[in-house]
Image (cartoon, rainbow, N blue to C red; front, side):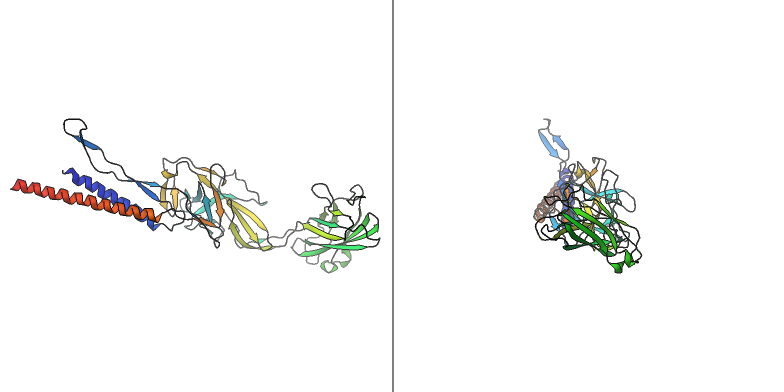
Length: 417
């Protein structure tokens, strides 16, 4: 009879622990990326009473319950105002580094921000790990992961134009002496824009001459405005005859009045990637269809955002988007073995498998959705149900204690009587 005290007390302790876990689940129902802890109860060793082995077995109660983390997917919510936020859809964890100890931790919470130096960090100040782009924008995902650094308040330097191309048609029915002009905007080494104007003149059937000029007001010496001349020869089918037409054509630029680098060279490409000419001569009105150039002015950083797939993009005032990094993900074969260490983070335990670090969407790792967050997977209805069950269990075992106490008092009274 007296073992009923310890048996009931073990149940009271176990249910009290379970209620604590439910309370923690409910407290974190709004925590980003939080994962529910479930309870696992088990009985203690039993004792056999009577002559027959195992004919009467009486248990010693319940052991301290185990907590098992439920890593099921939480709902993904878009965050239009959080451009750096990211949510994992599927398996995997973000890698973060503790700024104090340098230890690597793992999290599903993707509410990221930057510090004054441009370090990408979690809301709790942990460095997010991944791969930074090099000067050319290339990312080596085979390299070790490092702290991700994004540009903050930076100015994108200008790029001087070195290559141009123009798509157009020159009217085959035009009479000799007919002119057609087309203008392409180019940039010097300081990012100043200049207008490069081509004037095409038909000299004879299937033959056009051209003159390339810059605006005289943009130059230190206005007499150097003409930067190139040449001839375009067309075949009878209206396509360029590259046996008689130079390609590519190079122009040497004069000194600009704004002090930009002098003597730059621009290459005019008259041929498409498939070998066809960019300029045609058909029986249609002379008109320009397209133009391209590889220069750009200086531009101010507008914002930095996390795109789908974990790519970090910097957008500048000229509309250019530059890849500056990519977030890494780690997959762990037995995530329920990890230890929660607070701040929505987990650490590996001695039972945890080695993390497999790589690009999102590969090797069994989930994908990353930009401008989104994964909500807690706490189901409030389930937690309230569990709370009621544990409450009833606590009350029932409390009744066992009072009953055993009453029986003990009755036994003592019998002895005393």
